[in-house]
Image (cartoon, rainbow, N blue to C red):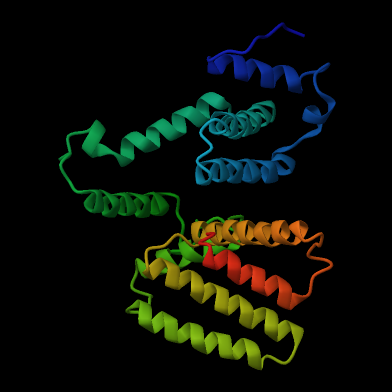
Length: 263
């Protein structure tokens, strides 16, 4: 095995990946495929998002490195299969970025507003979909996206061709309707379907309000954790725990956490 040291050069990372996959390398890494590594790639992307959400700038370089390693891992396995290599990945993204930013890298006016550039970006992506011979408006919204994120993207794409509610209030009314249908559902299959419809419409409301539903739910999750930690801390000070406390006792502490401004 070659002797390698930490480096700021991407070539070193590529060499590390090559060594891990070669005979005599890491048994676990050698066993992996594009399919088995894909879930880890998604997980690492969320680790990056979490570090940013927490403003953990010390951890962020490491998390971004983990995500970059996933790209290198996929590229290496693809190279071994004769599909493409890391250079193809870099060329693909540089080609796309140059094509999508003619106001920076071409002769187009660079003084457009951010909103105008966003509209232009969407038009370019629509042209790219046509070039890929995608017949449907929704065809290239990845099925592997987290469900809430995919719902928002599907609705945004449908809205681009006029299939959308007129305003947020109409969506709120639809949420009330879907919530009622959840309570009226009689079977497990019906409850699952109606709850899915409700979540789908909630994602649409987020889009109308220009709120990222994934980010909003992550924030709500974090707030719940902080408030529950308050419950645990207060109970521990009494020599108790959530498992020992009544629901009424924990609810009182939850309201106390809200009153103290724990968000």
